[in-house]
Amino acid sequence: MKTTSASLHPGIPLVIFTLVAAFFAACQPKPESPKGFRLPDGDIEKGKTAFVQLQCHRCHEISGINFPMPPKGPRIEVPLGGKVYRVKTYGELVTSIINPTHVVSPDYQDALRDDKGKSIMPDHNDEMTVQQMIDLVSFLQSQYKLTHPDYNYTFHDM
Ligand code: HEC
Image (cartoon, rainbow, N blue to C red; front, side, top):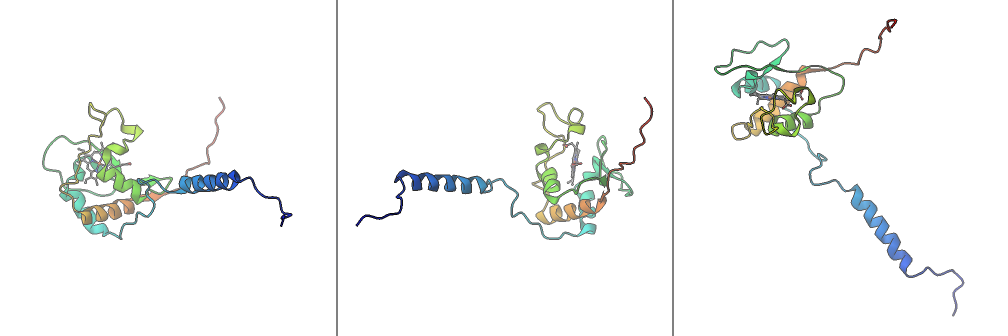
């Protein structure tokens, strides 16, 4: 018996299937996506202790905190904490801590990179415990204050 409904060209379902599959494949997160990354809550005070134990204060200052003098070596002072106009996510902080060369801030690119273009911030991954890293992130996050940019500029006559 002949059907009245128009039948599709046999190739068309395949084309639709391929397009849908490609669409979903494009939505899949890449293996290096931060999706699903969650840290447990850290302890701010322990993070401050870890900051000194790991000698982060050799190179970093945080406004309002007096750290003890670090034992040796020349000091550089890269400020951490303070006012930010956008939340510092813990993903960014963890990356800065365990993969410093991944994000060399443009502000420091020339002065604070070695001759291979890597950050001079050392890799602490062999000595730092995971718990210290979690606590460091909580400590650092507590030092950033989210503020709104001041848009009340007055324009001077030029
Ligand atoms: C030898 C110096 C040095 C030491 C020690 C050091 N850092 Fe850094 N750190 C830097 C420099 C230089 C930068 C900025 C340049 C860059 O982006 O690499 C930086 C950047 C950072 C940033 C990103 C700052 C921003 O505004 O995005 C964080 C967070 C940070 N360090 C945390 C730490 C912590 C935590 C420790 C200790 C475990 C530590 N650093 C130890 C030199 C150091």
